Amino acid sequence: MAYGLVHFYPGGTKEQYEAALAGVHPDRKTLPKGQLYHAAGPSAGGWTVIAIWDSKAGWERFRDDILMPRFRQGGGFAAPPQEQAFEVYNLQP
Image (cartoon, rainbow, N blue to C red):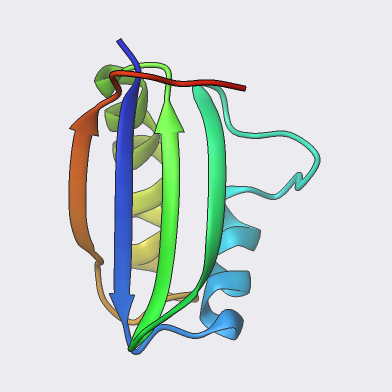
């Protein structure tokens, strides 16, 4: 089952997003393995990223193997996001 995430970075900026994206999505023409959808933009008080993954396990692999090591190296957002996760009931292209 597909798995969705909404990440909100309080105080986050476009510049921080671009720096984070360069480390975790270096090829902007394709998504990381298992990611089906990615959208991001400014929102009230910060920056929001929405991602849909093929499964919760796919998300967890990306988080543990790519995202978290990148955050530990610095560059990008200053702190982890506020996260809302959900099982995707309906996904349309």
